[in-house]
Amino acid sequence: MAELPPKAKGFIDWYLAAVDAANLTDKRYPVKGMNVWTPYGFLARRNLDAVMIRAIEGTGSQPVEFPALIPNTEFQKEKEHIKGFDAQVYWVTRGGATPLDVELVLRPTSETAMYPVFALWVRSHRDLPLNVYQIVNIFRYETKTTRPFIRVREIHFLEEHSCQVDEAAAAERVRSNVAAFGVMAHDFALPFAAVRRPEWDKFPGAHYSVAFDIPVGEARTLQIGTAHHYRENFSGPYGIKYEASDGSTKLVHQTTFGLSERLIGAIVAVHGDDKGVVFPSAIAPYQVVVIPIAGGKSAAPPIDAARTIAERLTARGLRVHLDDGPDRPGAKYYHWEGAGVPLRLEVGPREAAKGEATCVNRLGERSTVGADQFEATVLARLAAYDDELRARATERFRAAFEIASSLDELKSSTHVRVVAWCGDEACGHRVEEAIDGALLGVPELPLPLRLPPPGRCIACASEKPVQWALAGRPL
Image 1: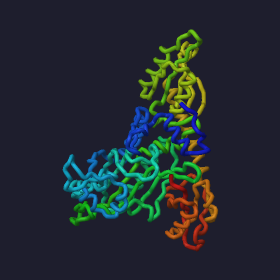
Image 2: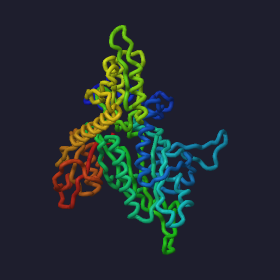
Image 3: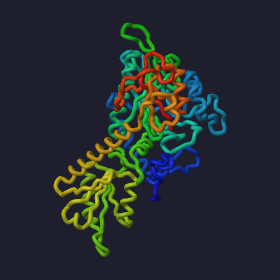
Image 4: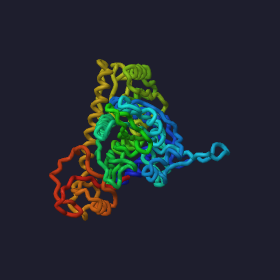
């Protein structure tokens, strides 16, 4: 594993090197932006999916799976949605050598695939709420520079779509989605800002959008998920209506909630260090790696003791890898540190004789795991590691934000800026021009920051009511 460039001196160079060194994906597939999931990366993705599924099903959402091809006749029904995606879609125009009567779109997201069927599923108020999700691949012709997990053309995507009885119920579903993401983010040890996007930056077809943003250094932010309230903007064109209890016919109000493989990129970006990737235990392909170590030049490593430890921990439900390969111990330590494994258990002749192991977590903290209550102690070490990972990430998160009191302060910003904003679009664009980025919007949830009451708008200084808003440079 080659030495990585320092993270502090160039995030993108470090990020690409860290992803390569951990062998999370292979970028050499001959379609740009469509990468191969390697075994190690696939395991991380599978664990990510498990966290997301547990949280979203905990809110009452049920799994479905819809086709990847969407008829253009359905795709064209919601014009504002089309306008937002027409530069990104892939078109299928032939079946074999035969031109298709109706062109097909390769799914960029699934509103236009699902909603003709929702109109068949929803007939009565008894059919509501309808909360369903799928985890599928979506395809977008990304024109910017592609980067593994962060910006790709084939995207591993969780999308929930819901139908609700009215606007208030839909707003409550959005709040439920935001709360569900908070549950996931706890497992990811990932502090985030939930931000209501300004009108000019919401999802095409949405009444409003709430995005989840994280700071990644040098005033840059990464959007890692979204929840949208659609009102009747889609149910009208697609005829999704129901008979209410009073006999009247009403259109449903709809929401969506989307997360992608970008979360893996976010976890690498937030937790990684100059040694490489750092995984929280919920996502790590292997939570524990066990390494037998020979006691001398002629002594064989205590493989039986190491194997017994690995088997005991596996029986407790942990993801364990026994590294009994021919490499020297130092090379193994270096490899598994770069791969982000939370705990390394070293078993030499002395440890084997006592039935114990030397435990080193990915943050460099060393301890001994004794023979008594071995499994419980390892589980406790993992929990303590995750707590420390959260604490460190939260401290860096807080340090990434800074209040700006003038537009001039935004021009050379190295932080995500907190600004007083009156809500006027012209003022928002002045902020964006000054920071050479985006006015991300108003926080939907309180930030873990100590903020005084906002003063006057940073752009117009008028006496209009203001709110704190965030401004940065989206990655």
